[in-house]
Image 1 (tube, rainbow, N blue to C red):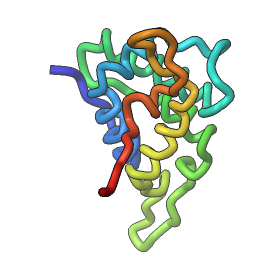
Image 2 (cartoon, helix red, strand yellow):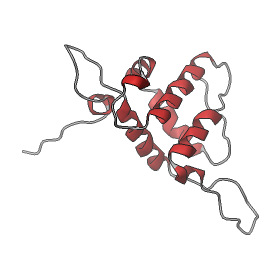
Image 3 (tube, rainbow, N blue to C red):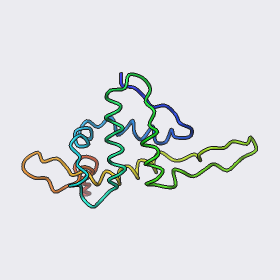
Image 4 (cartoon, rainbow, N blue to C red):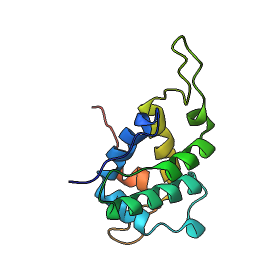
Length: 139
């Protein structure tokens, strides 16, 4: 079975989002060939590179993986994830609780930097457009 992530203190929102992304084999392939120097101007190249490095580390991990480097980049790229908790009655300190959907949205936006794959010729779509979006028709 694949290894999981260590909790670094109120980062379960990120761990859940990463586990979902990890289950997309096409994303693993696209990240493996991701070249920041030829990436589109969309998305967040630093966050995308950190995600690639995280998944590279997971491939060789034999026990729970500590995603500290990725979390650091995420907090720099999206400062809301670095907010500190308000000290409550119990005196709890540390980082504030965050929402997995908000993390998912930020990661999806960052992945706009990854070009789609060309199945027959050249694809003009981003990875997100090609694999994670759909069209809806109502008749």
